[in-house]
Image 1 (cartoon, rainbow over the protein chains, first blue to last red):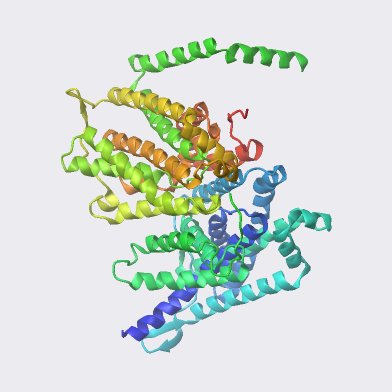
Image 2: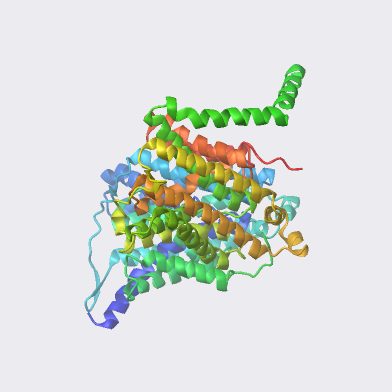
Amino acid sequence: MSLFYIVIQQLVNGLILGSFYSLVALGYSMVYGIIKLLNFAHGDIYMVGAFVGFGALGIFGSILGVGWLGITVALLISMFLVGLLGMLVHRIAYQPLLNKRAPRMSLLITAVGVSFTLFNGVMVMTNGEYKAFSTSLGYEGISLGPVNITYTQIIMVVSTAILMLVLYWFINRTMYGKAMRAIALDQDACRLMGINVTKTISLTFFVGSALAAAAGVMAGVYYGSIHFYMGFIIGLKAFTAAVIGGIGSIPGAMLGGLILGLLETAGTQLPFVGSAWKDVFTFGILILLLVSKPTGILGKSEIERM
Amino acid sequence: MGNSVGLIDRLKENLGGKKTRGAALAVLFAVVAILPLFANNYIEEVMTNTFFYIVLALGLNIVIGYAGLVDLGYAAFFAVGAYTTGIFMKMGVDFWFTIPISIVFCIIAGIIIGGPTLRLRSDYLAIVTLGFGEITRIVARNLKITGGASGLVGIERPTIFGHKLYQITDFYYTFFVLVILAIIIAMRLHNSRLGRAWQYIREDEDAAEAMGIDPVKTKLYAYMIGAAFGGVAGAFFAVKMTAISPETFAFTQSAMILLAVILGGMGKIPGAILGAVFLVFFPEIFREIGQMRMLVFGILLVIIMVFRPQGLWPQRKS
C-alpha cells in the first residue's frame, strides 16, 4: 500500500475512533460546564451503555433481526435507559453533596465510588467475560484502491454527526438548553429567576449519559465485542479530548474528540510509538497540553484557583 | 436522650485523657508486638499486609490529607520503588542499598509528575495522576528491563545482621518497624513548619501565598515525600513477594489506598491507620462474597461520602 492509501485508511480509522471519543467527551464537558464536576464515572456509563445495547439486541434481535433496524432500536433503548441511570446517579450520589456544598474533593471521590460500583457491578453480572456483539452487518462498502470504507463505518460517522446536530439544536434553540447554559453561568441567579436548577442538572446528566450510551453501543457493533473494562481507558481519553477542545465547551468536545482520534491513529503509525505505546502517547499529549494550554482550543480562559 | 449524652461526655473525658490514651496505645503496641507468639501464619500474613497498607496510606495521607492534593495514581510510586529494588537486586546490589536508590527514583518520579501539573486545578490533577499511573503500568509491561507482562521473578530475600528474612514472622516484625517509623515521620511532619504550610495551603491557597509560602514548591514537597513513602513500601513489597508484575500496580491498587485514606478521614494519622486496617480486614472477613466485595466497596465509598464528606474519623478543626 502506498503512503497515500495508508493516510486515507488511517483518516477513516481516526474519524471513527474520534466519533466515539467525541460522544463520550460531550457528556464530560456538559456536566463539567454545569456543575464543575469531573464525572469520573462517565467512562463506565459508556460501558454500561454497550451492555444495555447488547441486552436489548439480544431481546429484540430475534424479532427485528440483528441488522440496522434491530441495532437502531437497541441503540435508542440503551440511550433512554442509560440516560435514566445517569439521572439516578446524579440524584443519589451527587445531588446530596451539591446540596451540602461539599468540597469538590468529596464530589470527585464520590464519582470514583460510582465508577467502582458500575464497573464491578457489571463485572459481577458478566463474570468478567467478553461478550460477542454479533450483528449481520457485512463488510461491503466503497473501494478506493486498496482502501475499503465499509457502509458500517460511514453510517457510524453520519449517526454521530446527526446526534451532535440534535444536541447543538437542543442546547441552542430550546428552553431546556437555555436553562443549562444559564446555570453554567450563575446558579444562584437562575434559582432567583425561577429555573429548577436540580431538574436541569438532572436533564444534563440524562443527555450526557445517553450520548455516552450511543457511543458504547456503536463501539460494540463496530469492534464486535464488549467487556466490563472497556470504559476505563475511553473515560480517560474522552476527558483528554474534552480538555483538548476546552472543557465546558460543546463544540470543543466534538472537535477535541476528532483531533484525539486522528492523532492517536496517526501515532500508531509513528516509529517508536506503535500500538503498545499508544496510550502513553495519548497521555503524553494530555500532560503537555495541560501544562502549555490548560484552557484548550475553544475553552474560555478563566481565572480560578482551586 | 439526656442521659446518653452525659454518658458519652464522660466516656470522652475518660478516653480523651493523655494518660488513658498513652496506656491504651501501650497495650495495643504490646499486643501487636507479641501477637506472632500466639497467632498462626494466616493471621500473621493478614497483619503483615495490614502494616504494608498502613505505610502506603500514611504516605498518601501526606499528599491528600496534609496538602489537600488529589492523587489517583499513587500505585505508580509504589511500582517505581518495587521495580527499582527488584532490578538493582537482580544486578547484585544488596537490598539495603537499593532502598535509598528506590527513594531517589520515587522522588524523581514525584517531581516529574508534580512539577508541571501542580499549578493545575485539582480535578485536572486527578486525571493527570490517573494517566501517570496508567503510563507507569504500561511502561513496566512494555520494557525489557522490567520483565514485560510477566514481571520480575526470583527476587532474593534480604539478610539483616546475618539473619535471612525468610519466614512470615520475620516480615511481620520488619513491616511493624516500618509502620512505627512511618507513624513517627508522619507525626513529625504534621507538626513541622512544612506541615503547617501544607495545612495553610489546603485551607486557603491565596492567603498562604500572600504570607510568603510558595504554593507550588510546598505542594511539590508533599508529592516528593508521599512518593518516598510509596518507594520504601514498594522496596519491601518486592522482597516479601519475591515476584512483581505490572498488574499489581493497576488503578484498583491506587483506588484501594485512596479509599483507606478517605475512609479513615483525611489528614489524620489514626484515621489513615484505621482505614488501612478496615481495607485489609474487610475482604478477609467477607471472603465468601468474592468478587462482590469490590462492588460493596464502591457503594460504601459513595455512602460514606454522601453522609460524611470528611471521612469516618476526620481531623478536628480548631
